[in-house]
Length: 358
Image (cartoon, rainbow, N blue to C red; front, side, top):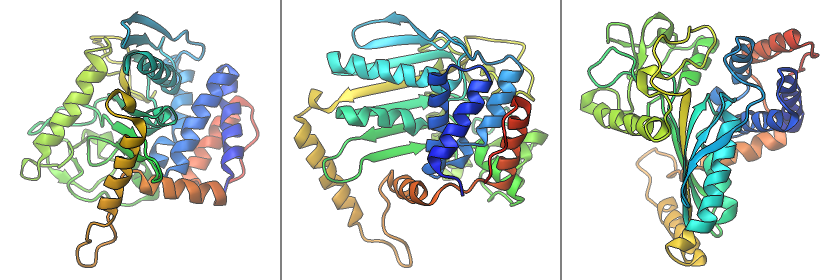
């Protein structure tokens, strides 16, 4: 078990050794550790190796000049200068919040970025300002449109965080696919099968192989096949892609650059890098803040009291599992998957840093 502060400091050091300024290294480390604490290891420390290999291959700029390239009172377009995604992402969400302070709402489209970690990290930034936070991103193409074997879309997550009064915040953070690439990678590292209905093989047949992406397979949209609403998941994934790319000028769909160094860069580009989209909305732009937060408490109380089905657990409010996990791991420490620890120490060796004891 590793204390979360020790882990953050260690990962910060690794990114400094990669060439990041201290402030940027701390942002990336904070986000990756936040993913671990919230029970989303697929977007946590296992990404250090991916990010390092991208930096090593000169496919990420460790000293970017992230900037606004177009704006109105309530909107902005941000160019990430090929930064690590958390750097461009945090800058962009801060811009959205500042816009919302003045205009009531703020909307930011970001281009020329990279993998930005957990979407909920950014949406939750708005909570301390009594704002609703929205965050979404496109991703490298691993997902098929309904009926297809062509990987044209990403797992494309979206997160929405809403402030409350006495209840914990409502935080919905989910991929628009039934599983993320990182979770498949963890299944592969653990040697376990993927449940049917999540992925297909290169010919479009159902498979339980978590490594099917390495042999031409693909992830299905949320819902899976058409009978189970996969076409609706396809629509959701497509919308996140459009908001993240067409508004900002980033690459869309099959042209999103791969976020792992072992895949070659694409020959064709239709934009700049990978894209994100952020929103912040002051709740007092709609009704008095206290009224809104009280009603959110009432909504949550109502759904907490929904009757469970036979032999089913209590109804879960979005954000509950992550919040409970964060409280637990903050106290007890984080248990890294052995293969992830091995990968982390391999990176440390290349950077001349002592191993982390897990």
